[in-house]
Each structure stands twice: as C-alpha cells, then as structure tokens.
Length: 243
Image (tube, rainbow, N blue to C red; front, side):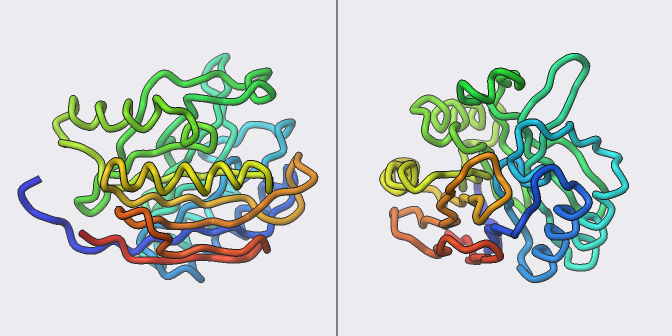
C-alpha cells in the first residue's frame, strides 16, 4: 500500500450472554457497540448463540439483529458477531459483519474442532476484510492456533492484490488451560507478521463450557499487549490501531 490509512479504533467485547437466547444476546451486543465507541467492535465466537452448540442457526434477516444494526448506525461502528448459520444443507460457524447497512456473512470458520465438526462444516477459504483502508485477516478461535491459517490468510491477501494484512481479527473462546497457549501464540503471530492481533473472548456463564477464561486482548505488531480484559463478563477493551 502506498499510503498508510488513518488510525482505526477497535474494541474487543465480552458481554454477558444467555445460551440460545438470540433476542437477549442481540440487545447485549447493541449495548456493547454503543459503550465501546469504536469503529470496529469484535465479539466472541458464536456470541449470538452464547456458544451453545445446540442453538438453532441465526438467519441474517432475523428481526432480533435490528438492534445491533441500529446501534451501529448510531455510532458509525462495524460489528463482527459470532453466529451459527445455515447455507443450503451445510451449517457453519461464522462471523457476521453488522453495520448501518445491515447484516452479511464476513467469514466462515476453517478449523472447527472435533466436537464442532459433528454439526458444522469447515470452510475452505480465508477472508481479508477491508475497513477504512485497513486489511483485516479474519479468524475464529481454533483458526488462530493452527499453524497454517495465518500464512494462508496473508497469502490470500497477496493473491487478491491487497499486498498483505495489517491486523488479524478473531472471535474466540478459551478455557483457562487453553489461555496459556493462546498467550504464547498471539504475540508470536503479531511479531512474525508485523501486524496487530485483536481477539474477543467469551466470558462468564452461558456457554457449553463449565469454565471460560475471558481475557479479550489486543497485541501490537511488536508482540506487546496493548489492552487486555480480565475474566469477567461485560468487559470491553479498546485501542487504536496505527502504523
């Protein structure tokens, strides 16, 4: 890129959610969007269903999502929310892009785990989302821990004529044990690619897991932690991505 984009304000939110309660969870997302005051607000994996794997798929035209669209319109934000979706006969774990213009699928998880694979299909293609001149490689949870995902996303950006990625954006869920590996892996990715890493993580009760770690965080391109939440639900961490 010949010109550097202006700084991008990004928030990672870990709202209090309820298993399978789309209406409640959509309102929690809308509240977090308004509270964040950021251009991009990232939510955890399957956030709209509260990581309840038995929850029904979310339709992109479900009226419950109007609350998030309205919040984005009021604040000028783009939200990346996690949801189970159905396309034809296949179901995917997805990140939905929600803004003033509506709802669309931004990305489908490429590396679901063994339990998730009982229901969800693995997507084949990386995605780089452009926002205000920033090239954002998208990921969902286990994708970030797989050696091949970040390189495949960077290579996709080059093939698409974008040149590379500036930030790696993920919605996730980690147990306390998994968090140890996450905290080693994310700084390595940031330093290795000279990019920002943003990860919104599930916090509190409401998921299929008896214990989750929270700890949504942002890492700078040198691998240092720019912002980090604790384990409690309702936390939002925010930083400004800049070159």
